[in-house]
Length: 489
Image 1 (tube, rainbow, N blue to C red):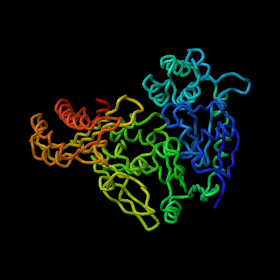
Image 2 (image 1 turned 135 degrees about the horizontal axis):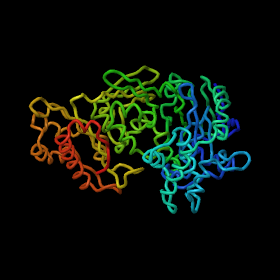
Image 3 (image 1 turned 30 degrees about the horizontal axis):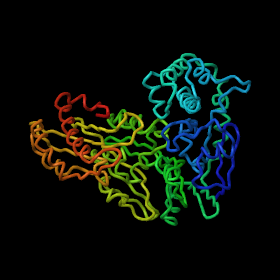
Image 4 (image 1 turned 30 degrees about the vertical axis):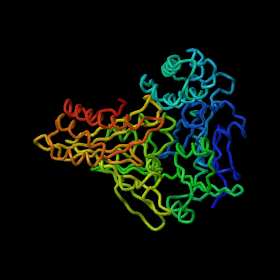
């Protein structure tokens, strides 16, 4: 057992034995360390003004990712390297090339958002030489600017990528070997428990230790990426106790590629899943590009998106349409069930006390199947879903519907299949007339609500129209659809 969190902040070793479980990295940086370059804007992981880099050991190497400090809890930082904008400048006072490019290209006006943009561009600069414009724009999805406009910032990214100075100039490249050694020394199999008054945070040393912790604390809040739980604290001011952090557990971060499908550990982030998905299930990879910004994708996990049971979670509908199964674990053992059966009602899942999501198995679409995902939002990037539809279709040799699975999020209290629509399509010819005839069946499957994202009428009409869209695309280019990007209507 241990009673302290250890990590590196810029170049300094930090040891914390007194820590509130819901203290955010942003508050720690600004209030305790006076590192005020990191700004608070939205306090919900939307604007990117609080962007920092967090480095961790992955597969023996050191990888840095941009994250939102406003919703990242300090308790999740054990054995990591936190890098703020203050660390970039060379010790002689010269700006880092990324910062200098922002100056040269006039990428800053009021300057409030600038540190966050610099850190996102720095993360891109560290990992990608000569990125395309699309890659640059993707890396900036999680950063908002109200006054400068994005063109000068994109030009800064293009300029700095053309000429990379010696690695010895960069503070992270220069100290990489030293940081790796220091992080290795911080790692271990001990479970960390810190008590602050009545509050307690726990960092299990292993997955087995996690199962034991939850057996003793079945009502604990389990935090992986905190992209949802973080808002419980910053927006709802909820007190969480105890909090169990699991984002460091490498056994939950494995992706196993099998002949018929993928097994995805519950701790796999969207960013880590993207590369494998792009090869095996392209439509899912394209959906991932629409989930939050780069910082959210680096923090958020597929397992967490499932475990929190949100009716508008982006990953459950397509996974249900593919026939995914979820594996649950507790101190008593493991069990698996179809993902669609995991969701019982709003805020209620088929999960016994002490159980947690361990992994998800996702079958590949068959070579002759059609699979598409559509995410409907008010803006393309960084927006919460109003309706998300997923369609998985197999036709027989005569062009009739041999099998079809249709799942929607945002249409009910849980992610839900359109069973009536599916039943009416099975065995019918896959034609526009058939699709048009079954549209009224959606009214039997869904009774959506009206909220600030969309009205009930809009949602119902959208679901019907997405089936028609899916038909038109399969009828027009059946092979191309396998590479079809999830995009907004």
